[in-house]
Amino acid sequence: MRIALASDHAAVAERQALAEACAKAGHEVADLGCAPGASVDYPDMAVRVAHAVANGDAERGILLCGTGIGVSIAANKVPGVRAALVHDEFTAEMSRRHNDANVLCMGARLLSVHAMQRLVERWLATPFEGGRHAGRVDKLRALDGGAGGCCGG
Ligand code: RB5
Image 1 (cartoon, rainbow, N blue to C red):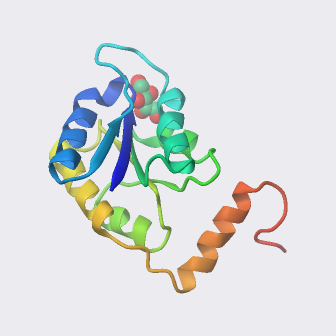
Image 2: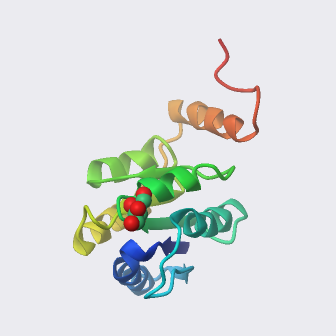
């Protein structure tokens, strides 16, 4: 799978470890920064991955910051991105099964590298269930298009 990763300065070592683990597992990895020692703004890093996923350069994206909150907010502003902030294996799995999440966001100040690796493995391996969830994800896509089309009433 083609995977794009990025983080802000709060998660450089963690991102590098995840990139290495993904490459070792046979994935094609694009590490989009930030550089060690830099101080950056998390929206700038999040849009790198969000754009890579939205334009098809990457099939999935992984974003890290201190809490995972900032990168998830930023990534979800890019049409086509469904970024999920996850904290454990249950939320990682459900973000795939029910939400067809294409970007995984985690907080490096909350989770160990080992824990994040487990979540990445679970997230990459879990399929979207489709079925009744497909229409709901279609409604998320409709929200990408701006006004109208979704969630009437
Ligand atoms: C950076 O200090 C921190 O604010 C950032 O990594 C992130 O947690 C924001 O949501």
